[in-house]
Image 1 (tube, protein in one colour):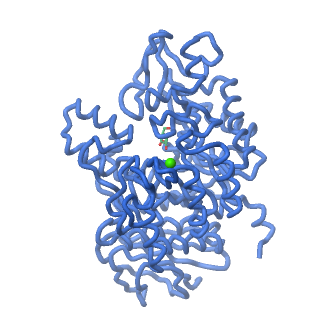
Image 2 (cartoon, rainbow, N blue to C red):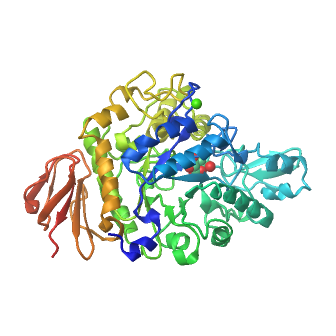
Image 3 (cartoon, rainbow, N blue to C red):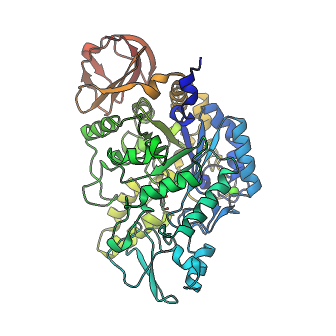
Length: 541
Ligand code: GLC
Ligand code: CA
């Protein structure tokens, strides 16, 4: 039964989103690169999993310096992925299956091959010149991909800003004509019937480079409100901002519906817990389970009536979660399910990254020439020059490098995992013989079916969307929490470690809803096996 209230709620509050990295999902023409026809081919698989929308990483025309995050034409499809007709077919075929397409919107910067930038360079008195950020002198700002964020252009006689690679010049959002151009391209896609935008590094658009302010600049929220008004404001549309600097205080600025900005943010606080404070992502430290619990629980304290959060473990920039917070050897299946339940039991909109649903793992390399990712390659060169040892750098890349998430999707046990009949652009993980979709579909106990069940619960049970959250008092190695609404009360218990853990919980189990192994009879005095995880309906007090 649908009540009136439920009808008015935006669809994305009860949805699960699946992220596709098109280059690595499914190739159909044997060139070793995934393509749009490949995604169309796999829509039935995604419908079977039960997801509501696809976040599609960039497929726009691009020289591919940062795998599509350097866009040369926002209104054209890159030929390696197919044609605009393929894209339109993907949108309509997905729609037939109840799946919306969320496009990646990369408007903090363009490619240096974008006609705007070509003109900006050639002709400093052109309107396009001011679409970019120029300065007579470089300041201390650093590029996220190593080195200075300023590149000297001899022809112009000025520096231009690039917070990422020098082939990714930053756009100047202070310029109203540029902002209008961005709204136009957004409307171009909205008119094609897409269901949303994932907004790449959106917190940077309000930058004030001369003051070395990048994220959360003073005009950021003005721009987002203007964007809302000029583009998707009246639509039933999902917008999610990539905001590394999101805090409990500023998340509502983006996502309070009354402010008319975005639907929700990606916050990354829990993704930085195994990084040394003040250092770079490559400088790791062991995860403290207490920290993880505290941060996850803290974000559940958002005022969900006036903001919204997303839930994710993986994306195309992050290493695989089962290799990072789980155990990708002895306990791969069990720890992957535990992490799935830990996250999907929470409040917010869950995102699944391709391959997560079959427990795909990191893919170690032994030398830099096996690495494709620009971020890792630049870091390697920079640190090598600073005197770091090769082995240590490769170790860091294996732990945190972005290629870990970008190896081809493992569909079956054949030579290239069913991804391509040709030579894959990035080597397939050798464990594809064991870890693949075909095996997962044939095993009723697989990680895939565990995810499928979690997605179904999200659709069927309002308590996951609306229920309150309460963290229970346990040892750091265990995370246990309640979700509760007027009718119902649920308990999630997860052993975060590969060791047995004792717990004592006050609850009386009414019904086991999902578990990755046996559930202890008596919760008052229970011993949890390694990575044990279960979800129960319990008696309300
Ligand atoms: C975001 C993307 C990442 C890209 C960067 C620059 O962080 O997720 O893949 O390299 O922005 O566009
Ligand atoms: Ca292809």
